[in-house]
Length: 337
Length: 280
Image (cartoon, rainbow over all chains, first blue to last red; front, top):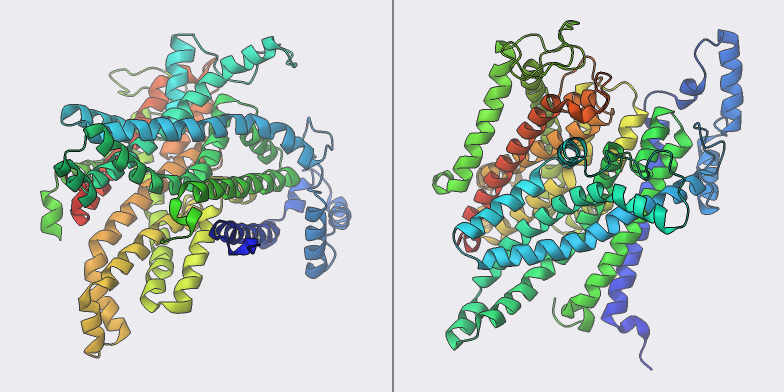
């Protein structure tokens, strides 16, 4: 039997896995350092204003003891890792969360963010590349129009586009809600009515994200396809009398491969964009949770949301790389590349 | 190289619009009212002869806000873009030039930072620093936005290295520093300027997004394009913030025009450097 580690595919995935583990390790160390290196002391901010000087000092001592900040740096570091590995990110102190574990609070909001990110990632990719490839093949005014439209769609500030859509469709035309995840006074449950209500609120944030990402993919794919259409193999096949449809499928297949490598960066951008859009649309995901945590100065929640976002991004990146390894024949068979 | 660039229509149009917006930011604030002037008689009024772009929550002149906001946003963008460029040239330029272990470490570092979700990180950093000035925010954005620029610089240095003249210079006994200054820099200059302008535009976009959700510089004292959006989001004068269309359409429109112009300029330059893309 052949050694499984000799397969180029397995090798590639192990290498990527190791890389992402290193990234996570560096990022988590960074999380440990940020509050300790930055100016300003979170403890000071937790003490309510109007406390006497004596009370302030006493409270500070108590809080430092409670958070383990009176120990040495190395002990703090060990505690940090042991808590992390046990999946303990602390307890939420912000109003409305009454000391629920941060992990639970974030996990309950994560689906709302992912339900936006994942469909947009895939639909945007296919739609954008389809439009871009066709735009490369079309000539003259039509091609130019698609080019400028997709440039504008991809370059416009997403949060502003959200505001414009809200202004046009929710305030003036009144066909879509102005925000939220469910209608006011609606009690969500696991039934069709809740699903319908959520879907109704889902359309605008989804459309905003989709239009922006599709524009990005379309501009990229158009120039990649143009580049391929000018390559020797296409020119030669054309001389041989291949049909246009065939030529196009060759060009597209080669043009789309570099686009796949862009999925990683697109995922990272999408998560950030979604977090800000959630705030504009009051959509109940981790972006809105982060903002509430920041406004109520809940440090555990702020760090917790970031750590879990980080984990999602790293995991997503890894999955995209695995998918890429399946698709790229050079990695699949280990020849060339 | 510049003669080639000027012949590209995309590059020319993009550059003209970018320069026009910069000029608007420089000249505008001198010709308009005080953007922070409080005026209780003119709160949240739509455009009129006296206030061509209307007034905001506190009766401030929106046209004055737009001019000063453009200037401040561009300044934040320039500082952030400059810092990002500096890091990018160091990390992305020295690696491939020195080669070997230095290159491997620099490249691995860039790749690691590239996986970080930058916007959430920026939100976290901005939230921890509660006293944010415009310069501090610019530095934060610069510190988190360099990996893209570093990659561009790195690939450009790699292609330059392939060409013979650097080897000739090295063989003729030129010192490293002199090769960088006399041979590499002149060839990189146009490229570095464009990457800087793109970094600047991304920084302006990021600043407005952060300021809009209240994580930018203090919106009651520093006017930026993002602070204008912040006051729309947190309006106390309208039932729905989106009713104040004259307050949020102009800053977003200026951002869009600026970003599209920078993109077209960058695209035009790509086509010049990469002739196979030119066939449009």
